[in-house]
Amino acid sequence: MEQWVVTSAMIAAYLVLTLWIGLRAGRGTSSTVDGFVAGDRNFGFLVMYFVTGATVFSAFAFLGGPGWAYSRGAAAFYILSYGALGMLPWYVIGPKVARIGRALGQVTQAQFLTGRFRSRPLSLLIALLSIAALIPYITLQIRGAGIVIEAVTEGQVPLWAGAAVAYGVVLIYVLVSGVSAVGWTNTLQGVFMIGIAWSLGLYLPYSLYGGIGPMFEAINSQRPEMLVLPGLTAAGESWSWAGYSSAILISAIGITMWPQLFMKAFTARDERIIRRTVVWFPTFQLLLVPVFLIGFAGVLFVDSLDQPDFILPYLVLNVDLPMLVVGLFCAGALSASMSTGDALLHAAASVAVEDGVRPFIALNEAQQRLLIRVLIVVSGAAAYYFAVSENTSLVVLLLSSYGIIAQLAPPVVAALFWRRATTAGVIAGLLAGGATTLLFFVMPDLKPIEMHEGLFGLIVHIPVLILVSLATTAQDPDRVEAYVNPPRTSMPSP
Amino acid sequence: MTRTIFRRFAIIVFVLNLLAVTWPVLPLFRSPEPFPFGLPMSMVWPVAWILISGMTLLLLDYVERQYEDE
Image 1 (tube, rainbow over the protein chains, first blue to last red):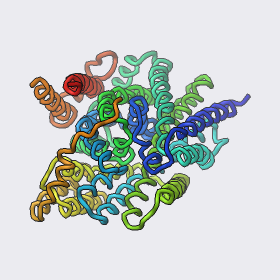
Image 2: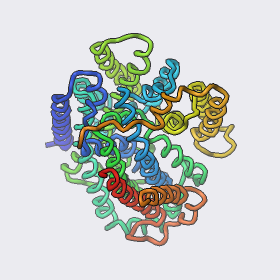
Image 3: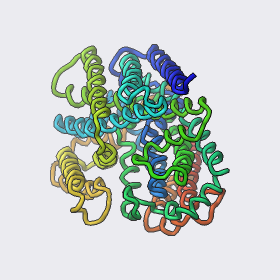
Image 4: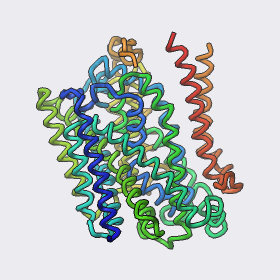
């Protein structure tokens, strides 16, 4: 039998399994907005752990990670450094957000912020910023799925068809089961990703170089510049320390501010589960080690690939692996793409309805759920359109969307810890920070040093937030107290 | 008392981690040599900090849990 037939059959089997789990997941959840968006606030530890891990590890980590290691060498190590750093503050912030959300019935980030900083324009502003950042991210996931399927079926299943089938499955289970489907499918996909990344990460260096040590020795003698920090730029020149360090900073600040992660604080059964998720998150972070080993395995073996993100499928197909391994790789890469894509679609639609529409138009529960579902299809279709039409600037857009998302960090910190913060201050800060980020993104030549534009945004954002807040009237102390010092409500015991 | 000490300790480790993986401390560990466990030092250093911060969190969480139970 032809190899691509076997691989396609394995992909089909994997997709059917995912669909089955996703559809089953929704059975125990109530058909309310709380159930669809926040899973009735009943996620346990195992599911929360995999949701967090699998959502962070996207197609970008599975294809982009090896791609960076292969083309930019040590530059990729910045990805190792921001995850654990960025999750640490969540140990304190996450449970507090969950407690406030439970007391005030919130399911989104903007609801959380506007609970203290009451303003409908602010809600709309956050919704627009979030969606502007989410759509390119979803596009990247869909494109990743299409690339993988096209590559392993040797072009028999083209990108548009592969992407359509994989994301058709995602749409069905997210529409039917809401966030519960995201939770349970991510658990399956997380297990797949961990298993496959480690087996390929160990197998490829052994089969190509005879071991991990010999592989790095060979790279060090033939391409020594690859292993020296801060690595290379995409053009092959030496990357700057400011660029490397600011990439870590902006990603660490931004990571928990992504709506698809932030909103999961509202899904946890109790605060203890959020803390445990943070404590165990670094174990997921170690998954990057085999991911980089895969990328480095390509350095001396593959001359120069036009698109380095294809290094993993390229190696898998050209190293004479058993068909089973090729199929498994495919399932792993699809897992990475779909486990992030489903969470993103769900978050984008929920945010659009809850924060963009509902503050302005009264909707009943049934209308809200219907509108969220319609928007899941609409945002999926929009992202699919971008994914299949040629668009090379997406990775750039994605990196820049971290700069936008990081602008949500000062308002969140202010809401929780600074009594004197005001609505006017938060809005002014967001506008100033967002505008600065956009300015340096559009005109990078204006940057005084080669730093991520999002950091320049924060440098302007924070003083504006503080000064405008101090210049305006302080908030009602009762409302402030509910955020700075939320009462310990009785929680259902774990 | 112990809780306050452990919280401070965790914050210190967190700040050290941030300094260790960015400029100006990171340039001290920029070279791939030596190769501990066959991996380049430039990669082992950030991985080591994942482990250090992870262990600190485990410890902090253990202490926090003792107080929560009370």
